[in-house]
Image (tube, rainbow, N blue to C red; front, side, top):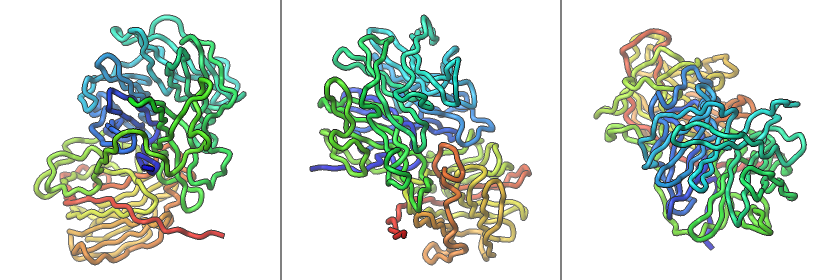
Length: 517
């Protein structure tokens, strides 16, 4: 029996949405304050995903000025109808709910159509008989508590790109007084309209519930066996937690599957990886969906879909000297200054930015998601500070309040700087005799080590076993996982100086099992 391992997209890939076009599957996830926004993936087997583009690639599509890392883009939905792809989402930092369109999901995508009157978050689309229906979640007008939301439905005129007609409140939640009913998606099967939502918030209490109706506008009847999937009853030390935010897809072979988010805590209850994308089978009984029949849980190993296995080689190591474009799976924090990044035969030439990564500003930072509990990141940097205050190197980043910097600075000092709750501390430093150095951050679960080398072969630790606990959402808060990347900072002054990164690699390490008593 063929099996696959969850998550199918490891690391900070939350709020997945999926659609099928013929034999091809397309998937998108949230990006919050990272740029470009909303990666789009393609698959033949629902397990192996190739990133074919990013949907929001222009600043006019994705303004992120001064956005905190857990703001920006929330919960995209991707749908296909009559030759056109639609991606609808919320920019909670600017403009609210909007959609973009494309005939090729790899891009380019249109400029945003902002939807007046589309309150709340988590928008989705349902197409039927030439009409399009918007559905989303918003606060009740007479809300009794924080997170007292309702799910609503309204027709969307695709020629005028505006909501029209009557607005219908179609459901609240499965549980009485449930917080944050959200992430609605509507499907039709066997003359029933099904409404899939999540409730309980996107942390430990997260759950997926379902209702159905014979008419699109309701009344929607909740399933008596709700929730159809949750892990909140399994305890906070369970290997997979926060299960929710699902989207269904039917294969060309008649199977049903759900993509959804969950988190993998490690080193205790700490969640540094953020919310990741998982895959689970769905079957039907008495015209209701049953998730992972006979099991009812999301598992790390699952039976493979009845689809041709189509492996994808996801690249996480880069020789910038040989590239013409920045790889699709690398990101900036907020809107980049594009002219600050150049590729030539030396590598990635990154101009220093006056803003620090500890501020809510545009910074010079190019990063990849942390995808594993144990990993190693290394780069080769050449940098000659024009002043003692300039610095460049590697950063492992959760937010502007919680991060570690491993940087080369004035007089060739290497420093490890910890930022915890906005308080900065130099925890280690050493002086080297070169302006060219290899830097490495190594993580064995929650233990971080910072090492350097002048030849790329023998690495010397400058600081070992720093606790990465502060980079977890459990301490730092927010909705994102960690990123690790290259950083260049001129310390508040305008500068023409730059750092050159010849190479950059992210590699998984085998996880060390730690016995706890």
